[in-house]
Length: 166
Image 1 (tube, one colour):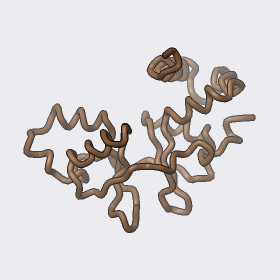
Image 2: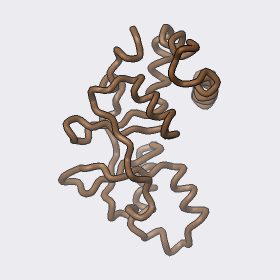
Image 3: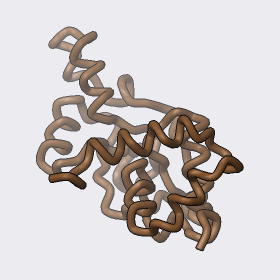
Image 4: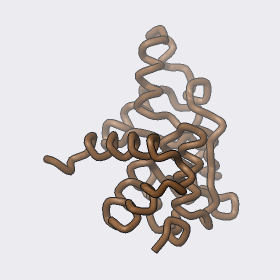
């Protein structure tokens, strides 16, 4: 088994919460809280379901620290992270790992024939590695496209920030 042989469709989260770009940050925060999630994909409208941005917990903290209270009614389209970073559904988890590393992101929108099918997160990738211990050997190899030091830092951050020791 290799990282190239595992499709991102195998680890994809299809149950993605979305919001329309005209909704405000308070509505988005409620979606996150009610669903115990860390991000919401922003779509142009529910009918076409075309992703146009992402709002994360980190974005909300940034917005809260820099925005006046009256701005919480502002459409999320003015506050979201965009443009979105996407991968094709035909991509591998190696493709996702490299793209996340290169772009310094934690989530990738997955498209199939230009239609939104789900999201792959850093958490999904590391859980896949944890379930397949042979893959850990691959990512720790000196020939791996992500520098060992960076991979080690990401891996240990993920390991210690999750419930593996609880």
